[in-house]
Image 1 (cartoon, rainbow, N blue to C red):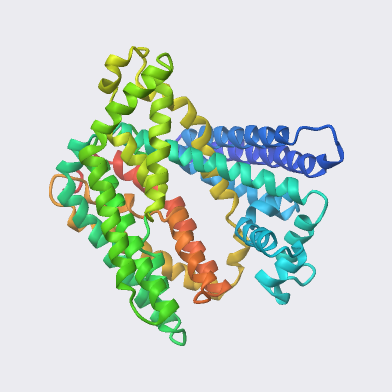
Image 2 (cartoon, rainbow, N blue to C red):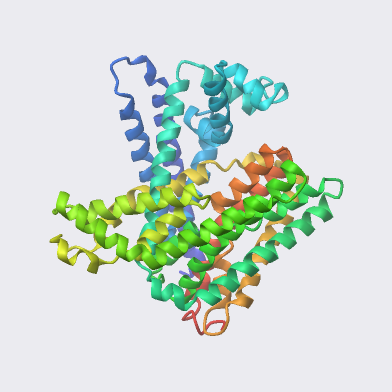
Length: 498
């Protein structure tokens, strides 16, 4: 049987029954969770544990199917999230509806909390009357939030978000743990060049695409479209390299180093664009603050982090010697992730930096057990990191793409987004696989969604354009793992396209 026939056989015998089973199980689970409020004796946390178990099981199923088709496991997690999330959403499952509109749910609950208004009044303030007409998604969300099971559903959504955020922090921490400062510094010049091209090319293409297809929109809208295309979601690329055992390759080090610089440059661009929208002028003080604090944070971690880590190891060893190799790395990673967020960087940058400075040798005098840091922490990552990717898939609403105009605009953004990041391979220099580096910078993930959501909240991006940007994010997020896996397997990396 040929490769294509085997794949078709797996699709018939594996994907369809598995997705159907996952949909039925999660559908029943969502219904059970939504109706559980009538049982007054029930522990509300039990429902959260049940939902976590189902999401992790779905991730395992997606990974298993992806492995059978020769794809990276993250593809299976994303795809099964999209499939199950949309199937349950069409069936009206309460949990799926709340997850699909999690951004709106958060905005409504925040408005109700801060203003003292009811859920219905807060929804009217946030969305307006036109989005609350009976039968619309907004009305459906408000009916669930305002009903007796609203608090339970919101708590469940929040808990799953916490677990998924914990997972991506652990993922980037382990990626940093499997890298070295020396290796990152060796590719520092290349990483900086890749990051610079990876910001400039997508921004220019996004701005030009917006100007071409939306000529009547304001200049700030074109700027935001360009900014949304600059983002890179390093978590997805890192997961592919990790799955394929290629984290030690030059390509992985260039991409990870470039992604950190990319995050800083992206924040500077976002500050510039937001400042122009809000005030009509460039806020130089905000730009300088982000740039200086980011440089200071990364420099301090790289040059002083190991010495600080040694002191923290000694402190933890004095308090709890038997578990120091588990507790100290977690606390250290959490603190650096928090510190990165405080200065305006993504928290995953801090987690990556923490893993970068920690080594097993730091614990030799602490009397800890023989297992490595990776062996201690990998089980936690394998539980929680898949939650992030499944939930990202479950928040993809395929119904956005029924309108031809939205599909056309989204397709143009996809082409600009992919072309802009593929161009970074030209700046990677000799001795590395330029195509793999370009593909590795393609996924936008949650970072692109954050950029788009800010533009929407400021009123410079409407619902249709936002849907087109979401299509770009989805496509780059799903295509990049497949393309990167193919690119890395097609040759030995450095010799493939140097």
